[in-house]
Image (tube, rainbow, N blue to C red; front, side):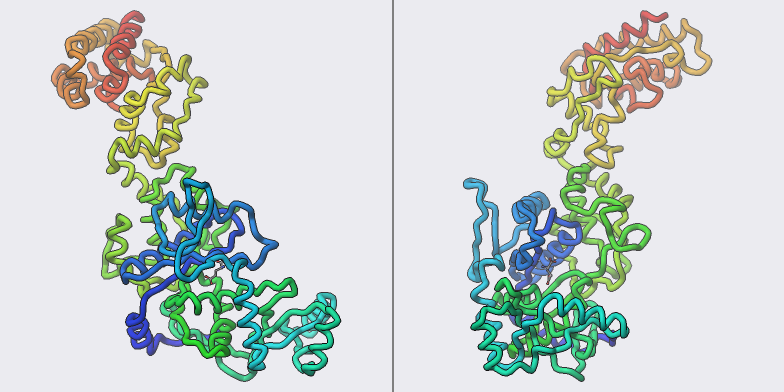
Length: 515
Ligand code: GLU
């Protein structure tokens, strides 16, 4: 394939803009939703919303052997999780726990459209753009072996292209198995006009006579995608770069039917950090994996939007809500080069959203990740596991340092169980035992004075800072160590606030008793 500069793009694009914008996501239900599918869907959604267009979901299940049960449900649930709502296609009907299709172009599941494809295959047969092929798989295997030996590209040798109509009818009558192939003209240049890549040219001599109807009566992807994009009035075909080599076959089919082409936009590949194609072996690839790892949907959407696009114009801003993305998204600014899935960047974006989310909403998202199995570290560790207010206070204190929701509570397990204080840990630098014991007693008195209503984060902070005066370390260190039993933890004020008055006083008493 040859890439040339973008031209005529603007004119073509403007013409299309005058038509209704309709985009589609067309996943095959072969497993759980991939992060690449989310990126395509997101770009579809942003583009549709920005242009008052419609987003169609179409299930491409023509390869029944690859179908995974439950994949469509998974897809619909993940879309709900991330907050992308399509306009037409299958939807989850939660009341009846069923999938239901909505929209004027139904059915949106290709296996329910077989008669439509047969009709269009017959049109191509009538026009001489397609032919029946009776070659057995053994013969095709042998042909490919020979081609490999003589270093020829693997392409169908057109044995059945010249069969007479009578012979075809006769063999069909005899119940011989057949497929239908498209008949690609030779010696032509096929141009795929791509919004992101410009004109990409292919020699028709390298395009195989692709099977368009299989012997089981199902169309192949190539035929079904073209027929459906046409019938569903899709204006822009947005999909991953891995589909670019298929695009000339689609362009040929559009021409055979005499249909206007949609605008194509092939999105850049997603890459691992070592620049290889994104793979499960090197990290997470499914949307569910990312959500299960404690990434907020806002963070995931924000991160995925930047996989292959940015607002440009020297913009360094990285944080955009879904609505803000709709405002600034520009399909023509999508990059050609592959986009690295950089988890460190995702963590950074996630931290941002964790810090600024409403605490009750954050709590509701986080609590499912709370690992109450903390006994390994502290006895009696589950005493607060079901205490919403307590857990919410822990979250409030931790949120500024959390990268993922799954980390919640992990760093500060001492909140949850019975701790044991040690003299060494309680002692600040060169302080004597008496000095440490005095500091602990004074801290206990100060805390005992604060009544329950004033046990707030702010009041604890100001009261304890006042009590510490200039000599902060010798007062605050023993207090913090007594409350936590740890060398590192959030501030003593925050720890006291989370633990509550009674527990704080009792932990201090245990520490004082050591001296
Ligand atoms: N069914 C294809 C997939 O699984 C869609 C390709 C396209 O968008 O044309 O990704």
